[in-house]
Structure formats: structure tokens, C-alpha cells
Image 1 (cartoon, rainbow, N blue to C red):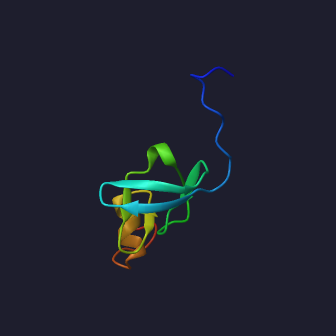
Image 2: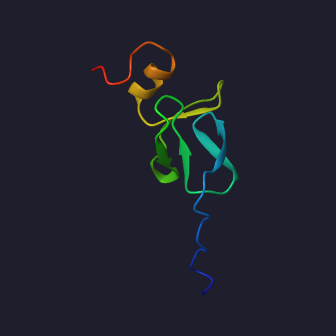
Length: 75
């Protein structure tokens, strides 16, 4: 490996500290779980989270499911 290559990330679940507009990885991994649906979210696709609850969401709809404002599978 040369100095430009990155070492591979561990293949497990990451631990994240969610901040306003960004997040900090506190335990390396490749994904986090959606609090609404339980599906894994790759870190490079993570776009939605709640700072107060420290939870990640796969989509805006997943947050509504988590908050009980929508049932899973209902459009």
C-alpha cells in the first residue's frame, strides 16, 4: 500500500455522533442502522439523522415511521 491508498474499513456497524449538518465516526465501520426501518445505511449514503435523538434514517419516510406518524409499508 502506498501513501495515497486508504486502508480498508472494518466491515461492521459504525458508531456515529450526529451533529448539526455533519456527523463524526466514533467507532469505524461501513454502515449504520436506520432507526425507523432497521435497514443498513452505508456511511457514504447517510443523509438523514436526528441530532437530539442521535438516530439515523434511510429516508424522510423512515423518520415518519420512527415517530409513529406513518406505518411501515403505507404510502
